[in-house]
Image (cartoon, rainbow, N blue to C red):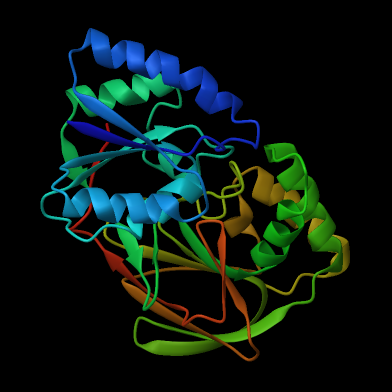
Length: 291
């Protein structure tokens, strides 16, 4: 039995992607003779509650139909990793974590991966108060998300315009980062812990990051002269941000970030106010259907 948790508003408030995908998914499920139940979310954080409820009721396969935000809610509802597998049908605006796993972006093809495939261990990030799948960060990405959430129309283009506006006005943040047995001080416009390699609908903040290698990738980009910001942005668009001299990149199993002032943490696109920024990789618990 496949239990689907579906966010009808994923990919935009009008839910066009979901409305288009659901009839195709149902048709394929019937064709393949697969038993299934659709559970629709109606409010924020309900995917967390549904995941926890279904696991407690004995569900063994939970399929998330939505975007990175819905996936984030679902992973935070997992209470039994040994007996439950996760499937992913990407129907969000960016689908960054699905892309990091090389999942098909076509919903029916993604469903076939689940029906025909075998779940495999996939890394996730554990913090003291919350879990993350893709990217955890603070700094400029928080400001970008604040601007983006104020937009009536959500799209990759609107995210990019928010990023450009923030780059022109952002004040750098100072923090200490402790990992691999040492602590360093940074004055940066972003501090990111990556499991996946991209965010914001395709912006590759850390191309080497792989959510199956058992490591975290820590990225900090130091202060950049205002006149060189556009060049850095173009590098980011091309997936080459780590090539600039201000970029620092390290691999580690665990990292702690200590900002000098109160801060907001972006976890998979969700904003958390002043939570402990301590992240550890977990490699041998979550099983996901993937190529």
